Image (cartoon, rainbow, N blue to C red):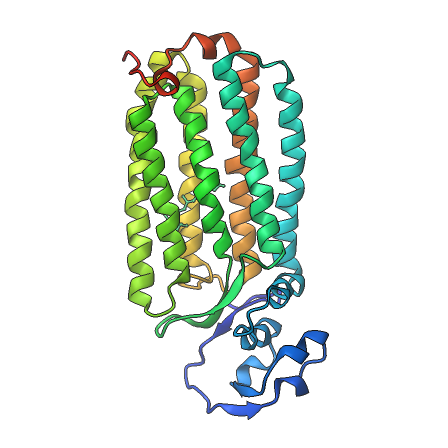
Length: 319
Ligand code: RET
């Protein structure tokens, strides 16, 4: 599938043409052409702006990387929408938390507030070009090159533990259980990052992907099997059930987007569409999730405070 937003990464032609040597400066006019060098490019890359940016990928310059975003309105809008929403959500959470006074409720509130704050940093990293880049795909991948938003996987290492900590404290799971699940979650994000950054071999990319899925299963097992019992015992079963359903369904969307998007099978060849898919998942998995949680905590502070304090105090809650 080719992108309608003009952002498709470059699909390998079935019959490769011979490379021709051109001076890239002769086909580009913006100021950053000053950084470019003459090099071999393939004729099919000459019409695609992202392809031309790809030609420049060897220049280690975040100005060029930021151009990847600026030249692609669909990609840029998927990032700016999240910066705006995360900002509004953070302000709303500060307001909603103004009357929360119990220690446990405040802990959940603080963790929840950090979810949009981490998100703003993540999206600004992508917008500024620090955590985005064009990478060459290994032989066998349907695309020659693709825009990798590797900063997403990196910052999930910080945001997803916050979500799990909030859920774990709500369900009053014990500290060792919470630690194991968060460790599996961090491993899931880092192996996902490794999958995205591996350019040497397609098999290795999918091996990292598979490993990440194994860690993901550990997280899912806790959310679906072990934590609900704890939440019932803590008296938070109902809200935990709602948030768990939201989390499980939405989190399953991320590996699916990876698999069908530009970094995986490239069934969706547009980086803008792939980015919007992640951004849409983020909006519900983070801001809607956090809003529901905080709203419930603000209205049910007594129930939160009366729960046993397994995770917070390091003791095991009664089943
Ligand atoms: C990857 C690819 C490798 C396989 C798996 C993945 C799972 C990612 C998940 C991400 C959740 C992110 C959230 C972010 C909020 O800030 C890394 C896409 C299993 C589940 C909720």
